[in-house]
Length: 272
Ligand code: DGL
Image 1 (cartoon, rainbow, N blue to C red):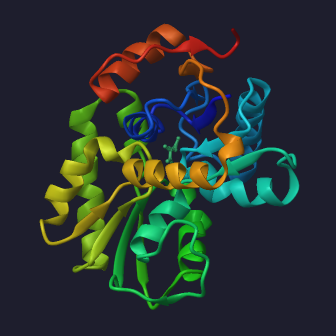
Image 2: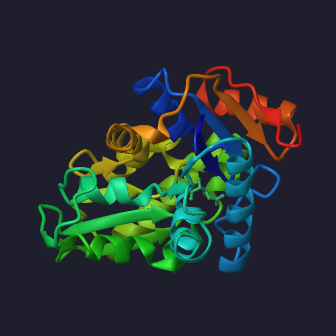
């Protein structure tokens, strides 16, 4: 029984590869909805519908646990899915909480009341839909007191990364970072709140300067998943192959994914 990993496109591969490094024996089933990427410029209803449809596709292929390796889906759709849709024997986890637990200096799964933390000024870079949802601020307020969050919607960045136009993507990072620093000149830390962005973590770091710590999700989500599976061994399941599926053209997506990650990744069609 593989753990399902879902993203609107290639971005979730940054989470997928960190999970593979940390838990090489854990079978995974990755699904990229490349046909409908990007999600970050869609409205909430559309994001909910597509996220439910793709999560169901992973349930149908034997996954009992699905990670939404997409901040946009986690921010916009997850709460509603948990309240109204997820079947009792299935679990869906987002990628926000592990990052917020790290920012708020908590152990994985620590749900104690909010408290003061070291970070006071926090820069958030995310898709327009994630920023508009304010889900990051909501989840953070359950865990930390007195953190000012300044959010920068990074319109266009996911499209540039999906097209492997790194020159354009790097220029966009510089312009989004400058726009944020005009409003919050000295953040203590910055959060890359989109799973596509870790590919350009070094560019964010360079644009922000060395004194600002940058949190990115891959390693944090992998560590928190390992902890979750230790606490829920029934979700580990039997050994099996790891596969990558796409709603797009598997040949094109394999080429784009290989360029994106810098090593070979082969995709199969979701349609089978
Ligand atoms: N990787 C998705 C995220 O983390 C990108 C969303 C999009 O498709 O715009 O938000």
